[in-house]
Length: 129
Image 1 (tube, rainbow, N blue to C red):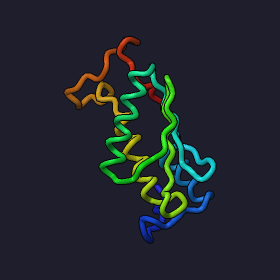
Image 2 (cartoon, helix red, strand yellow):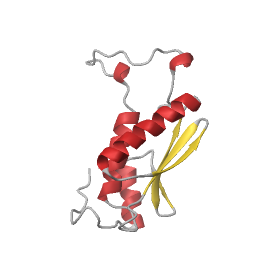
Image 3 (tube, one colour):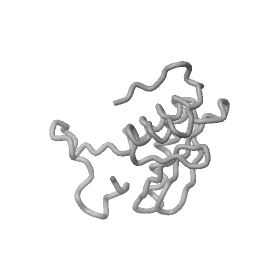
Image 4 (cartoon, rainbow, N blue to C red):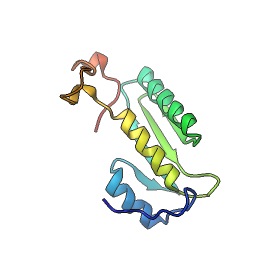
């Protein structure tokens, strides 16, 4: 993994640096119009609300707030540091945390005592990559 520069949390990355870092660290995310973005596909409205609430809790705890596009079966998360007017380490850090929490599948971890959701479409809420 590349060691990315460390100046301040508000130092803005260039588009080329953003693309390279996303490719290396967050391959399901993409850069578009000044934002790093990720589309999470859900199984319907209830699941969409679960994603929105999870992202909201993480963003509020981090005090770094994304823009969200919310529809029946998907949520698009957009991150850009408004104060810095670009993508910074804060955006990458929050994207990593959102990805870690939303993509967590305890049933896939053999060492976890948690089973995860049953392999039944009635209980699926997020479409995992």
